[in-house]
Structure formats: structure tokens, C-alpha cells
Length: 195
Image 1: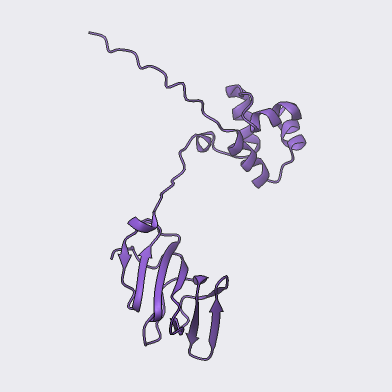
Image 2 (image 1 turned 60 degrees about the vertical axis):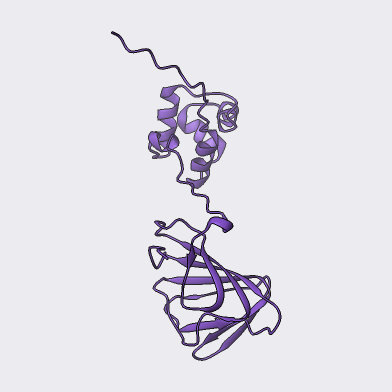
């Protein structure tokens, strides 16, 4: 018995924007790349807008000119959605805070933490460090005071502060009435993300 043939999905593969991004990353103009690949500028422009398709030979030539792996144009990007209401709660040792991990648990390059701090909420009474190269704190609403061993920095809504993760610090929402909402960006990711 012969297996049934697989029906094509008829899903068009759109690689134009990926080719455009690769061209721009390599610093080529449309004219330069078209000339190097033996194509016209107009044709290459239509390809980048996914208005026409390339032959396999032209695609290989373009990729050779840009030293680009042909397969990279067809890989599915690793995209992960974490919604605030479903993000795992994490405990970083603070008090009066609700902290949620907004990046996937296995992400090793960057971690994003969303913090809701009650009035008086704090990162802890002791200074601490985080095993990452850089920390960025962005204040969405309210305000906090960042405390370092040698200085204090007041942050209000819309402010962002970048500092080394190895710098001893803590923070406090010193408002007696107003909550604060913060986003922390840590790079590279300092922990696996387990709660």
C-alpha cells in the first residue's frame, strides 16, 4: 500500500524582510547588492517587499555575496510570550512587593522582572548584589529611592537607572501612600528563573 501524498500547505514563505535586514546589517545599498549579485535594483527592491520571488540560483548568489547561510532565512524565530497575569511570581527577598518573571525561565541572555511595590515596599533592608553584568531599573509609576553604599538616587515615573549588577544596592518606595511599578532588566540572566 502506497502512502498518500502530502498536500502542500500553500503558505508562502516570505523572506524579503529578512534579506533586507541582512543587506542593511552588512552595509550594502540596494544598488551595491543588486550589482554584486547580477540583479537589477528594481527587482531586488520587489524581492525585499515580498512582491516577487527569487530563483534558487539568485537566492544562493545573494547569500554568498552577504556571507549568509541560506537556511537562516527559513528558520522560525524563537519568540516567547509571557503575559503579566500568567507570569511566575518570584521572591527576590524584598518586602511589600509582588515580583513577576516576564522572560521565559530558560532565557540566559536577559531577564525582565516586573515589580509592584506597595508604599514602603523595598528590595530588602540589606545591600545586595546580583550576578549579572548590568541592571536597569525603569520606573513606570510612582517612585523609588535607589540606595548604594556611597549615594542615593531618587527615581520618578519615566526615569531609568543603569548600573553594574555587582554594585551593592537596595531600593525603597519611600512614599507613604503611592505604590510604585518597576521594570528590572538584568543582563545576562543571573538565575534560571525558578521560583
